[in-house]
Image 1: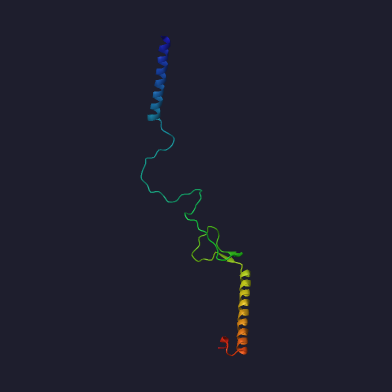
Image 2 (image 1 turned 180 degrees about the vertical axis):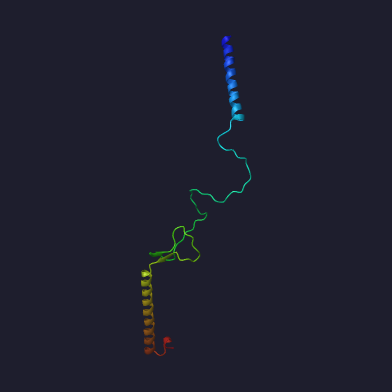
Length: 130
C-alpha cells in the first residue's frame, strides 16, 4: 500500500509541476521579442534582394546580313529605343561585293551597246535597228 501511495504522490507532484509550468508559459512569461498589434498599412513597392529576372516572351534578335562586328553601341541588358543602331558591321566584304556587282553591270551595259551597234550596222531591217 505504501508503494501505491508513493506513486500517487509522485504522479500528483508531476501533474502539479506540469500545470504550474503551463500556467507560467501562458500567463506570466513575456518573450524577449517585441510583439506588435496587427494593423492595416500600405506596403512599399521597393524590394531589395538577390534574384533572377526573366521575360515572359523570348525574343530572338538577328541581323539581315552576316558580317564581322566592327563597333558595338549597346551592351547586354541595356535599354534601347526603336530603330537605334546597336552595332556596326565591317564593310570591307560588302564594299568588295558592291564593286564586283558594279563591274558586272558596266560590262553588261557595254555588251548591250556593242550588240546594238553590231545589229544596226549589219542589218537595217532587223528588229533591233529601230
